[in-house]
Amino acid sequence: MKGNKLAMDDIFRKETKSFQAYVPGKPVEEVKMELGLNEIDKLASNENQLGPSPKAVEAVRQAAADIHFYPEAGCPELRRELAEKLGVAENQLVFGNGGEELIQLIAQTFINQRDEIITADPTFGIYGITAGLMGATTVRVSFKDKDFDLPGMAAAINPKTKLIYLCSPNNPTGNYISKEQLEVFLQKVPSDLPLLIDEAYYEFAASCPNYPDTISLLAKRPRTIILRTFSKISGIAGVRIGYLISSVELATELNKIKLIFGVNRLAQEAARGALKDEDHLKKTLEMNRRSLDRMMNAFNEWDLDYFPSAANFIFVDTGIDSRRLFDQLLRLGTIVRPGFYWGWDNWIRVSTGTTEQTERFIQRLKKVLDSERPASKT
Image 1: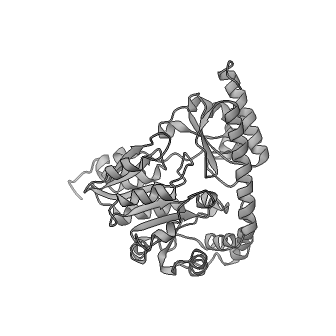
Image 2: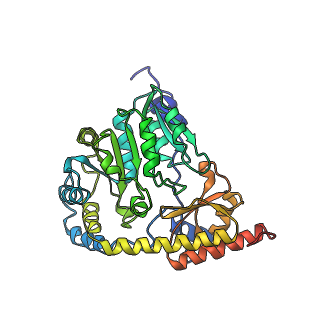
Image 3: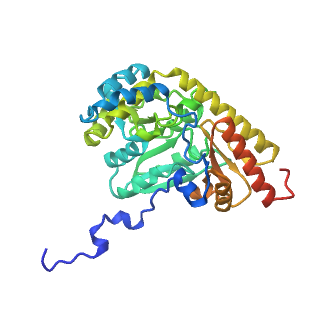
């Protein structure tokens, strides 16, 4: 408009000024080029190192000939099959382009400026990022004695609270909220307050003692949203597909504003194939348990503190600044996630891997620990 010059800060949404973008893990090819390495073990992003479900891959191959057509907007075939598997109604499901898009969708659906959300600390950073973009404040409740401070989270509820986020198993710590803990917590939380339970790592934890049946919770607490994904257990993170399970009321509102074609044709078919692949699921769980056991044995031998994990990663205190340790492991050929991102400076998060990847990580970590702490028990 003539005579109306906008300053640079005025053309952007005001929340972007203080926005801190999420920092993803380094791509393997980038690291190879930077350091001149031929092989890299990427144990930073909680990917399935067994690879994708073979049935998912075959489904993608068969669907590839039809990618000139737009995908089915409502994922009807996947919706029917998943609803049957979960024992829920089809209109209780919301599909998205991975868990990240669904978390953003939740923020866009529920949050207004000056609202507040409550999260644990540490936890998955996307909760605060997506809420912040909508003008909300994140109230972070620190862990206590290496566990969720659920009483503290309940005490933080106030008239501005719009959403509570629970990640179980939690990223980056890997611990989960037991059935008993959740029941006590919900007695202190108003039933009309929306609650997100992020179960991206559900399949790894489902067999753990006292892991809650969150889907059954929907009957008595309909303002609950459960997030799950095919990225981790099925090994199809590259095609991006996740889903929400909620009451019909909430799912209807969420589906109103989601991207029409957010879940592409190949992703839908990959997920359908993965649903049928019990053999891949079993092999993934076996690989995961072997890798966790091997790492925990090494950490015990070296007197390193860690969180016992119910996910496909483990969070460990190395006693070394995680920025420096990250760089040294990177140069040896293993990528991990440094804990300083969460304010846990001496901790690292390491994804599980094959036997060979796990052994290489242990040998490389021992080499760094020996050089940094020559008097240690390593």
